[in-house]
Image 1: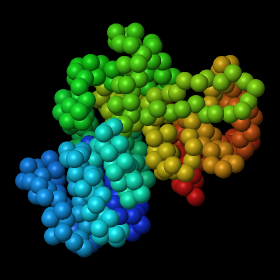
Image 2 (image 1 turned 45 degrees about the vertical axis):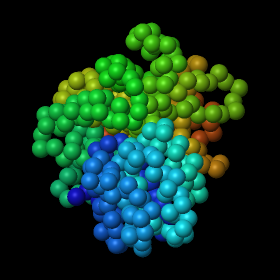
Image 3 (image 1 turned 90 degrees about the vertical axis):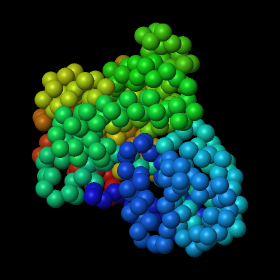
Length: 387
């Protein structure tokens, strides 16, 4: 089993909070992680998709009383949103930390109900598909780990599939199941075919500015409908909306956000790219690498850093700007093994007074290119940023 980086964070949060919620897309490994956590202490696990387990919560107060001093895990908690008001009184009655672990796919109702009813009692963690640091620790993967992650994405069953074709089939099935089963279960009433077309359009616009009006015209939808579809895919952790970096400069800055599919394997499945050979000859090759780099960086840094991209109307651009306190770091993503940057890159560094920048590229070792800028393999860059 590939050990998840979130394991230690979850244990720490359970020591500090009465309840912990682990949210993320389906099939990303939430249940596997939870069962690993439950092995560390007396516990009880309920899968609320199973009628027999849901029946045990017909009288939740009595059930939790029987499980006193045990950590209770409720998997697929979005199937029983009515339980949240009861959970508040149960947590308050006991008063201790580490009482409850809930797992779920995000939805507007789930986030609203849990945050309103359990305010001050629950801590949220986000689990995504495998990241590069997680798979790099597995013996025998070596240099193939990055290429496999880039091609197949990080969903466990996709990444660990016995072949590229088996992985691609799994991802196609995941997309179909998400649209036909998971979306209706979240209470969202959109035809599967319509949302599939929209998701594919997002894939074609991966790494580009979000133009709701243009997307709407392509699909015969209003810009407000497009924005609501973006919200659905964002709240279910399937796309990332990267905002423009806010800077107080006397320049005309681009104000529209960018959109990325958060898992590059799903990106390739939606675009019909079944293997590395096909990907490397496709126009999406460069922005696919960009999305992989950005997702791994933001996953590694958590919410301590503010993240955005920088672009002026004159075309000066940085793929990723990270800010914490008064510190700013820039990251440029290049899919070439011999990356070069344009004059606009250096201009952007001067605009934002950035003295430390990186170029993330599929190279074998790090090297400087001047003015505090280094070309680095993604694994080395992630290790550098986590220091």
